[in-house]
Length: 294
Image 1: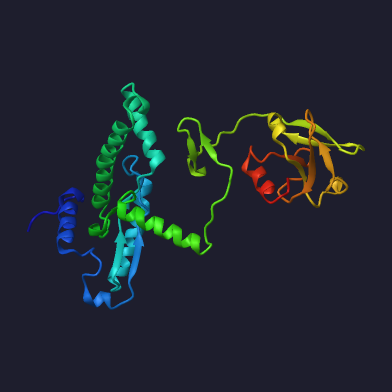
Image 2 (image 1 turned 60 degrees about the horizontal axis):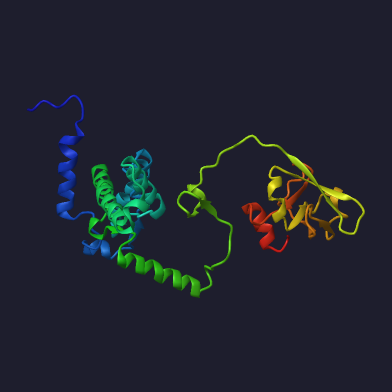
């Protein structure tokens, strides 16, 4: 009788059995007539960005998905787990930019066509690496349905869904304040912003009543945005400013008057309890301004 190894050696068996499963098509949805007769179960893998190789967070996330897929197969459901990767345009552009910097180049120097070729070459290398990693992890995906988010058919499907949602009134297009990246020269999502806390100072600015009769003091850490103010906000339940709501004040250094409004977004305990609304400066200011509060 052969002697058992003292320690498990995954490299000896995992690749063999995974290849065997793929040959048998055990992960392919629709192959079993009995399963097709039962309620199907399907899910789409959150497509990893092709910005590099997978990390431990991906391993944990995909293991949990794999458990779900395998459990539903064991229950006899026709199970489909769709794999794929995401082009992640801006993030991928940034990593290719960094690769060019190592060569002392910029994307402007190499030109659009050459840069796009570099991006597709990156996709081929790291998209393939991600797929290989998922297979080494044992992910029971239906690889016959693997997708990439820039594939023509997939892009067409996304456009179709957006149009349908728009026609149903479920999505809309509007103006909103964005995070502008001066390096990429484009808008980026909140997830791509790295917040940094910095030591600041609280300044107090007096806004005189337009018709005379006192001033309202506003506390701010960004006095330089004052010229973009469209209003002053106080909390509706703040007794100190009850007589100010509805009045107009003079914006210092200008000939403009702006309204004093009541809004629950104001923190009464912070500073003077009165804040200036500068819609072009901050998402917190943009929201009440878009409601017509300033």
